[in-house]
View 1 (cartoon, helix red, strand yellow):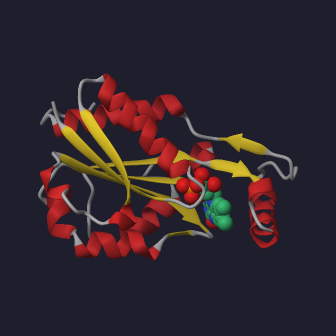
View 2: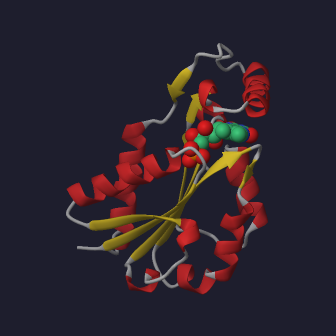
Length: 181
Ligand SMILES: Cc1cc2nc3c(=O)[nH]c(=O)nc-3n(C[C@H](O)[C@H](O)[C@H](O)COP(=O)(O)O)c2cc1C
């Protein structure tokens, strides 16, 4: 049985939700897992068998706090099985839904020298009514450019939950010292 720590950074709770689904899947597989905000810092992170960082995209970027955390705790990350996943609306698109084809994941890898052992990208949530006027219009503009929903009543989750659970299974394999499928 492995203990796995999820450290997430998000704004409206979806990265937390994705982390929670992975935690539940790991528990189902016989492991223990905890989900914590990245900003809580590592505390007892050294006592876990694997560390997973998850972060969402806001206005084209992962939050600088994510990069700062990785820089500061790089030795801790490198000492354990580790993984990173990124949540965005762009990742809903079939040609941008893999680490290799997703521009935000590629940018992430260009901005850090950390090379997580497992990577994933997942589509996030579009919920216009939750955003303030500026964000609503900015996101609607992006949706118009990328062929997404522009109806201001849209509230949709683009997250492929089966893939999220499959990724959790790969994390379990990594934490157990097996080769992830
Ligand atoms: C203010 C704002 C800006 C966003 N900017 C982008 C963006 O530039 N590209 C993108 O693909 N998704 C963008 N998104 C979509 C988020 O990544 C998506 O809603 C995700 O589910 C948010 O997860 P969170 O609730 O954990 O922050 C944006 C969302 C918000 C609210």
